[in-house]
Structure formats: C-alpha cells, structure tokens
Image (tube, rainbow, N blue to C red; front, side, top):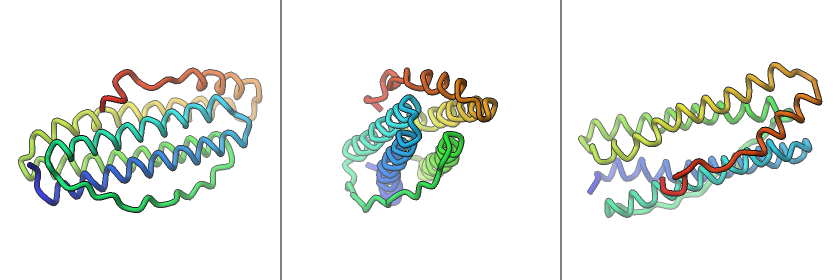
Length: 170
C-alpha cells in the first residue's frame, strides 16, 4: 500500500493524463481545420496514448488499494494557427508532463516506495522518447517553411503513425 500523499500525486497524474488527451484532441481538431489529416491523425493517436496512460495510473492505484479520486478535467487553451505552432505547443506540454512524472518519481524515492518507482520508470523513459518525437517533427516543419509540397509530404508521413506496441498495457 502506498502513502496518501503518493496516492494523491498519482491520482493527480491520472487526471493530468486525461487532460493531456483532451489537449491533443483539441490540437488534432486544429490540424483538421488546416486540412492536414495526417498530422491530425498523429495528434489523435497521441490522445489515445494519453488515455492509455491514465488507465495505467488507475490500474496501479487499484493494485495498491488506494482511493481513486476523479477530479474535474480543465478545458485546454488552444491558440495554435500553424502546424509548427501546434507541434510547438505539443512539445511544451510534453516537457510539462516530464516534470510532473519526475516529481512523482522523486516522491517515490523519498517515501521508499520502490514498486512505485519501478512503475513510473516506464513513464520516465517514455517521456524522453515523446519529447524527441515531437522535436523531430518540429525540426522538419521548421526546415520546410512555406513549401506546400513538403508540408503535404510530412502530413502523409504523420498519417502512418500507429500506437506503440504495448501502449494499451501501460
């Protein structure tokens, strides 16, 4: 069984993962309006992955016999009007997620909850990959500038995204 403070932190992360899914759905909608269905699909897959993460936190809490605290999910503010702005917003968000996961890992160490630390390790490691994946897209979008053919090529590439193997199991 984990401490009340650690359970509260994990509950907050579960809700934040659902907020993240909501944010990515909004970013997907923004890309749909830009007629970039591949990029919109990429963001939709990101939303699905965040829901999977929330389910992972839920399952961990249940396994630790901790209380589940469902809080209100905030409406995300989305003001991105270009594909580059959308992915820049996504990277900013992923960096925030990384900080939150790191704080949970730090609390796990402080409380000597090593099972929680092992559980969180998957998320700590994945955040490095998440930030890198978005940065690669930002780099490509930055290089193409206003080249519509290149943008369509990137959009087609983003349309190929599938959920990572094992994502649903997290």
